[in-house]
Structure formats: C-alpha cells, structure tokens
Image (cartoon, rainbow, N blue to C red; front, side):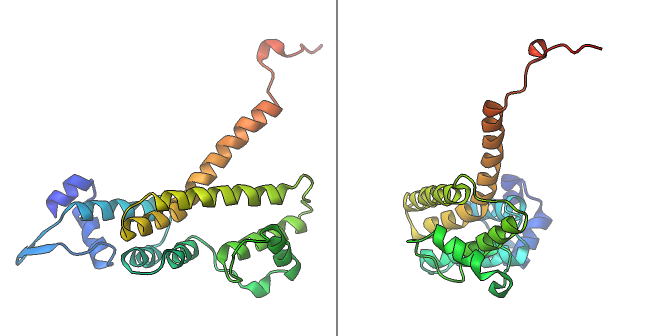
Length: 212
C-alpha cells in the first residue's frame, strides 16, 4: 500500500478509507498484512478522486456510480445512474405542467423517459425563467437544446471509441459527471469571448476625454 500511495500521490490513510467505503477493490493478498496492488488500482484511484473532487459527488453517490461501472448494466442504464448522481432530486408534482410541456416541445422527437432527471431539471429551470420574466426572444431555449444534442453526440462518440465494456462504462461515468464541469467552464470562457467581441471595452487612448 505504501508503494500505491507513492505512485498515486494519495496518502495511505485516504487509500484505506476508500477501501473501507468499497470505492477501491482490495488488493491481492500476499501475506497476513500485505497485499499487491496494480495498475487497475491506480486507475481506479484516479477515477475516485475525479468523482469526489472535480465532480463533487458524495462518497455514497460515488460508490453507486462505481458500482455501475463494475456491473454488467446496459450502457443506457449506466448513463441513468450517472445522470442521477449529478442531478438534484425533483418531484414532478412541484413543476408546472406547462413548463414540462414546454420542454417536451423543445425535445420533440428525442427518446426521453418521463422521469429523466434532465427533463425534470430543464422544466424546473424553464419555470423559473418564466417567473422572472425571461422570455425566449431569439430561440434561446431551442438553441440550447441544439447545443445539448451536439454535446450528447460527442459523448457517445467518445464512448464508442473505447474498447471493452468496462472502458465504455467508465467513459459514460466520466463524461457525464466531469463533462458537466467541463461544459460549464467552456461556456463561461465562451461567454467572455463573445461578449468581448460584441461589446468591446475601449482602450485607454481611445476614450473620449471628459471636460471638468
């Protein structure tokens, strides 16, 4: 375990915690107090840290996601596990039916289940937008839907590029959990880029002097 700690940069106490919480599989026993750890443990440690530190998952939620990776669940169901891990629990009864209908119109033709956490979350956001008087002036919402479809295609292309079922399931999890953080960061960078192009700040020499 000391070697695993050195190779991963993770303290022994933290590795033991991951073992106790069933996030990390046990090593191969080589003696009463010794076990052998390999490359698969290093890879799993990187996944655990990514889910906890970048994805912001709780230990219990991360365990459920990792269990989905290790299972034989169909990839569509693995997506569902990962989606629910990063989504707030929303009671459909708390959402205005008109907001749900609005989302359904936006994603018309998509194969989306009624209890999909993304559908519910999007309807909740749409309901909040409308309560704040934010109107869809220039196809705001439909352009978001189109962008989401492009991102989903990119996600699945990446999954299909992997070899084994385990590699594909791991990419499903990483892409869903960490992909949210990546897209959020890129969106903020893009907003600065586009706003700078549309509303440039005059440089100091270009500013018209004021009279006192």
